Structures are given as structure tokens and as C-alpha cells.
Image (cartoon, rainbow, N blue to C red; front, side):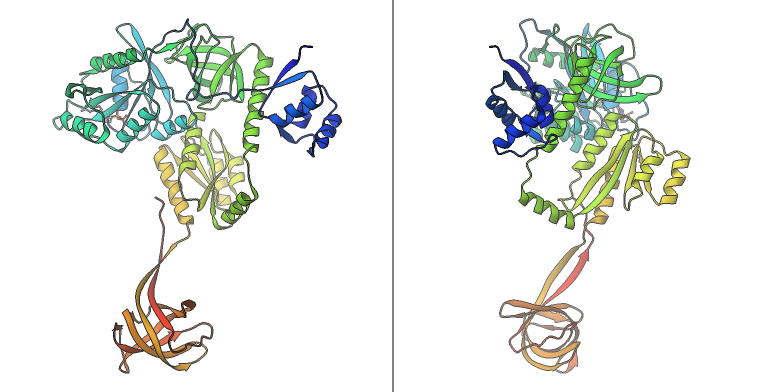
Length: 589
Ligand code: GDP
């Protein structure tokens, strides 16, 4: 008899499994019990257990594990024979102020990036440019944090990275980061040496830096990296740069399938009044068209409007095309992959599956009792910095949260995002934040006057930012304040007790010989007997030859007054180790 094949996730609840295989749940629980598994209806069992039970029951079902949606980075898509050439996806990256935005403007022949705060593009955008009838897709590099977040989501989709270096400034930290990003993403590098119109420009120096320190050797020196001198200001070299990008892309033989259901990546999503969810997608395979049902992570919808990057309505979009769609019922997440399904029912099922997958992934982290003990002790020691994050668009929200999580405190301060969302700060946020120490971060959003009053009344701190780095700096400072101060002891000397003259409840007067370093008034001392530390006390007075002295050095005899808190009986032969103690405020690396 032919078996019925059912596909399930990596784990399934007992109730869901019973429903899937048409078995009364009590019978399934009984069967599990026979196999030594005590489970309730809502408990999750893993795929292997489910398969064994179904087999034992002798049912006509064959369970198959659902393949987890792989991100493009790990998705080694096998292209069909019909795959055709596609245009390259190019990211423009480089150090702040080296001219990325100006270069994009020059390439696209228009002002594209408006309202940049502090010169840093905050969320990822995509454009298309043409050169000699050929198209390329340009990804506007957001603040590098957003790119890091995108990379974390596994969405390495760049074919070519244009590394912009200002000829008057040379290689800088974010230049190095851009090179590293390109290498990790397996993308080809084309260097644009910008601002060559300036008197202070020194392209040779840039090339030397890149060649000697970063292993990028210019073609004209016999290497294989194309470096083009450009000026975003005068337009000089822009054509040559685009030619270089196309040349490098040609060598890659970039291809995509066009006759498969569309798939690709969510690069930005936000809500707009009157339009609902406005989502930027990058189509990687197939053709996307209005009317199609889309699924991205836990969000789904039907393409209502389809526009190209400039907002022009289009009928369909093929591989390497950035588009703007409306029709999603809620916001997909930045970095989600999207796919096409047949109808609304399938779309809903797919999002349910995605949700279960997500929960299962969260639930399946194996925690041992040792881990729990460790976590508990950490929880006791570690301070917690609670935050609520609000941002203008989903993409920014994701990058802010991801970047916040990357602030490393060596496990001493835990940052906990207790709430987040897209939109202005609301009364609800303030309400939620009213627990001690919770800070609300607003990124590119407003704080309405009524909410501001409420926050002031409840003593809730709301901090608004337009630049991600500044927000991160602030969070770092706040976490530094929570760090336990560092206690630094500096050893200064040692003494051997030769006689104890008087011992009272809170003072000892004794004498001895300084055997190392020195002793001064006001320092601390450890009392050590037979290698064991007995106490820590303060030296309140030092005397040499019965005269009060500031310090007594190695080789000299001296008398000491020690201030004690508990009664301490010093003995001849005890060792005093003198040290100074500083309490230092700590900073994060
Ligand atoms: P980004 O931070 O990398 O996006 O840099 P911008 O495009 O915002 O440019 C930073 C500054 O450099 C701006 O003041 C630009 O006008 C200036 N700039 C950019 N490209 C050139 C160039 O080719 N020549 C000159 N002279 N200035 C430039």
C-alpha cells in the first residue's frame, strides 16, 4: 500500500502530530508512554521521536522533515540549464565622508539619498543604474551596523563591492571593514579612489596602503584589483568605474533562473498611512508580478502594487531587480527571504510553519543543568540594562537591536530588549518602561508632547537619536555605569613582625623590619601567617626610631599602628604585605 507522506518541522507538539496522523491524542500519548516518554498534548517532541512512534504504530504515514529555509548565503542554488545572465548586485562601501553618497548620486545622475542624518545612511536601499545598455543594481550601504546585521541574517548577496577611499584621507577603519566584508561575502572588489579633484589628493599613497597592508594589488602594478581614480564632484572617472564593475561582473558569469517562482530577499519594510506595509525586495530568481502571493518569514500578503526602485509602476520584475511592493498584511523582517505560494491558504500555512520553526528553534536550545547554574550565578552577578527600542522602519529597528546586542560587556552587563516596535514613542512604551532603569531609545521617531509629559511624570528616560553610532555610544555609556568598579591593588612593600606592643579592640601597635619595598602611612596591609591571609587592615601611623615618619624603607626597623575592625592577635613572625587600593571606574572595550 502506498504510504502517505507528511512533512513536519524539526519538532511538533503531541497534539499537532495526533491531528496530522489522524489519531486520537490519548492514544498517541499512550504510545509515547509505552516508549518511556511522558508527554502532554502541548509538549514538543522531535522529528526522530515522532518518526519512531508513527512507525511503531504501523500507520500508513511516512514522516518527512521539512527542509529549513536556507538563507542565500548557505543556499547553494543549483541553476537549471535555462539559467540566463543576470545583472550584478553591487554594494558601495567605505569610510564615512569618503564620498559613498556623492558617488551614488554621480552614478545615478540624481540626488537619491535624502535626509541622511550625520552623513550616515541609516537603512539599506537599492537602485539601478545603466551603462552602455547594461544594468547593475546598487545597494546603498547603510551604516555598517545595518550591513553587519544583514550579514548576520545570512544574506550575503553582493557580487561586487565598490570600496570607496578618499584620495586625501587614505585607508581608514571602515575601509578595512569594507574590504573584510567583501572578502567574507565572497564578492569581488573594485576600488574607487575618490576626490582626486582635490589638491591634497594622493592616489599613489592609497594604492600603496592597499597593496602593502591589505593585499589589494593594483592592476597597473601587476596585481588583480582594479582601482579607478574618480571624482564624485566633477564626474571624472565615473564611466571608467562602471566599466570596471561590469568587467569584473562579466568574469563571474552571473546567472539566475527566470522561469521559477520568484524568490529573493527583504531589504527594507515600513508602514505607511494609506499604503500599509511598504516593502523593498530584491528579486534573486524568477519573476515577481502583481497578484502573486508572497511569504517572507512570518509575514505574508498578495502583491498589490509593484514598483521599480524609483517608484515607477512595473508589470514584472526579474532577477537582480530591486522593487517596492505593497500588499503584505504585516511587516516582514529585514533579511528574511521571500518566496511565492499558490494561494492565501498556502501563504497562511507557510507563515504558521515559519512561526513554529522559530519557536522550535528557540525551544530546542539544549540547556544543561550546569548551564542553568551558570546562568543563575551570572544573573546574580550581572547587571541588567533594560531597553525599549522604537524606530521608524523595520530595517532600522532590526539593525539597532542587532547592534545593541553586539555591544560586548564581557557578560557582566546584560542588555535586555523588553519591547520594540516601529513608530513613535507611545504611552504604552512609557508604561512598560516604568520599571526601574528601563531606557526607551527612539531612532528617527518622535516623542509626542503628551507622552513626554507622561515620561517625565513616571521618571522614564526617553532618548532620541538619528545616528545609530550615537545611540550605541549612549547605550555603551549606560552599561559602563552599571559595571562593577575595578579594584586595583598595588603592592608596595613587606614587613616581618618582631614584636607586638599593645593590642586593643581597634588598634595594634607592633614593630618589625621592612623586608621589601617600603611602608607608608595610610596604606593597607594584609596580615599573613604561614602563607595564609588572616586580615586586611589599615596602617595609621609609621615610626622610625620612635619618631613619626612618612615612610620607612627596606632594611629598616619601624613601629606601626594598625587600625583593626575585629580583634586581631598579631604574633612575632607574621608578615605584613603593604599595598595601595584604588577603585577605578571601568569602561567597555
Ligand atoms: P559618505 O559619508 O561616504 O556618504 O560621503 P558623502 O558622499 O556624504 O561625502 C562627504 C563629503 O565629501 C561631502 O562634503 C561631499 O561633498 C565631499 N565629496 C564627496 N566626493 C567628493 C569629490 O569627489 N571631490 C570633492 N572635492 N569632495 C567630495
